Length: 291
Length: 278
Image 1 (spheres, helix red, strand yellow):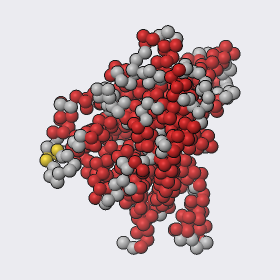
Image 2 (cartoon, rainbow over the protein chains, first blue to last red):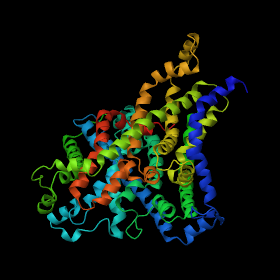
Image 3 (cartoon, chains in turn red, blue):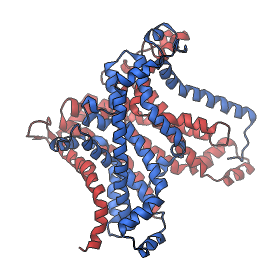
Image 4 (cartoon, each protein chain N blue to C red):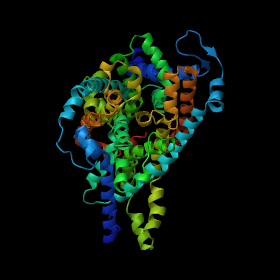
C-alpha cells in the first residue's frame, strides 16, 4: 500500500475508530451477551442459547405487555400524531396572517427534552392540584377526575397525550415541506374538470405526498419502538408495569435487576423489529436514488 | 396553493380552529409558568387560572441556587461546547474522505456508517458500561464525550457528505494548482464553503446533546456532574411536593432551548431534519 492509498483512511480513522468502539462492536457484543445468563458482576457467564428469548415471550408477562404497549404506541402515533401533523400542514399551507406564529407554536414542544415535557405534564396530571382535574372540578365534572398517571387504565393514554403534544410539530413541518413541492397545474386541471375539494385531496395531494408519507411513517414507527424518556419521566413504567415499553423494560432488567442476558435479549428484539421497519424503507430509497 | 380561493366562512372556521388549537397548545406552558410564579399558599388557596397574587421571582433564584439548576446548566453547557465542535470536526474529516479522496470502498464505508442509525442506544449500553469501567472512564466527562461523539457520527456524516458532494470539483483543482495539500483543501476550501451545512448541524447537535437523557442517566451518576435532564429528574425526586420551585426549575432548563429556537426557527420549521433522509 502506498502513502496515497493510506490517506483516505487517515481522514476516516477518527470517525471510524469512535464509531466502531461506541456503536458497532457494542451492538455485536450485545447479541453475544443475549445468549447468556449473567448478573454483570461474576466472571463466569452461563451459556443458555436462545433461552432468554424464549423466556421473554413465554414467561415474562411484563415483556409481552411492553411489546404490546410499543405496538399500541405505534398505531396511536401513526393515527394521531401523523394525522394531526397532516391536518395542520394542510391548514397552514396557504399564505395567511400569523402562519409563522402558528407554525412556531405547534412545533415548539418538539425541541423540548422528553424530561421537560414529562415534568410539565406530570404536573398537569397532578391528582389534587393539576390543571386537568382542577378544570374538570371547575366545570362540574368532578366525577371525571382521575389520578391519571397512577391508574393502570389511564396512565399509558395520559402519557401518550403528552407525547402527542410534543410530537405533532415534526410531521407537520415535513408535510409542509412536501406540500410546497406540489405544482399547481394538476389542481387547476382538476377544477376545470369539475373536481370537488375532497377529490383533489384524495387523487392529487395524497399521491404526490407519497415520498413525505414514506419518511414520516418510517420515522414515526422507529420512534415508537424507541420511546423512553417521556415514559420514564412520567411514570417510570408504572403503575403496576402498565406503561412499560421495550426500552424502559430493558433498562430495568439490565440496570436495576442485573439480568444482563435478559436485557440484551430485549434490546436485540428492539433492533430486529426496527430492522423489519427500516429495510424496506432503505431498499426503496436507495433503489430510487440510483435511477 | 393560491388556485382555490377559500370561501370566507371556511376561512373564518379555519382561523377559529387554529387559534383554539394554538391556545390549547400553550396551556401547559402557561400553567407551568403560573405555578412557578406563585407561593405554595397561593397555589393551594386560589383557583389554578388565577394570575399569581404576588409574582415570586424568588422561586427562580431558589431553583437556580438550592435546586442546583446553575450547576446542571453549567455542566450541560460545557458538554455541548466540547462535544459539538469535536464531533463535527471528526464527521467532516470522514465526509471529506468519502467525497474527495478516491478510494475503492467509499460507498461501502458510507453505508457502514449509516448502519449505525438503525442501532438503538439500548443495544450498546451494557458493553459500553463494561468498556467505561475497564478504562476508568465511568462518571467522567471524557467518557461521556466519547459516547456522545460516537452516536452523532452517522447523522453528521450523512448530512456533511450530502453537502460536500454539491461543492464543485473544479475548486479542488484550483486548490491543487495553488499548491494546497489535502489538509489545506479541507480547511481552506471545503469547510468554509460548507458553513451553511455546518451551522445547521451545530444547531441540531446542540439541541440533541442538551436534551439527551438515557446515556447521561446511565453513565453519569455523581450528583455534582449531572446534566440538565438527569439533574431535573433528581430535583423532582428531592422536592416532590414543592411545585412552584419544581416548575421554576423546568422553566429555567428550557431557556437555552427557547433562545436557540427563536434565533434559528427557520432551520427547524423548514423540515430539514427529515429531508436529509439520504
